[in-house]
Length: 165
Ligand SMILES: [Ca+2]
Ligand SMILES: [Ca+2]
Image (cartoon, rainbow, N blue to C red; front, side, top):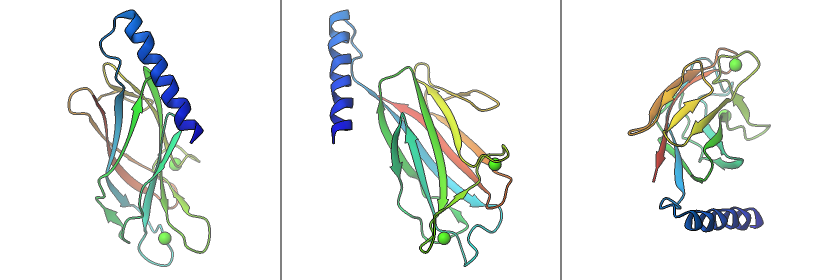
């Protein structure tokens, strides 16, 4: 894909700049989001147990996970990993209930009214998660974060943010 080539090109350019500057850490770090748990807080799927999946956007790159087996409380350990080159990377986490007949339903995992997804930024070095009421230190073993929505079709999510070299 051309986007991939573009990203690779940018990465190579960054490596060249690094080499000229004499920097040793030209290699990209990976930003790793691990979705450990999703727990329904009300009725998500009118026809039975919800079948959750996640969509995670890291620096504009969208990754959809597989659909979990039907359950109101899952521990999927979905791992979404993407190379990062910026000092600050934007991340979005969305949870959906798969719907075979109509549009997948967005599950509310954000306590803010009329906002269902989670938006935040990750600073690379030292690793910090920014954009919530508190700043999380994710250097070392990463940060485990739990958030929940409070509108119709709401769930609680627990995920980890980590940078791996
Ligand atoms: Ca469903
Ligand atoms: Ca909300």
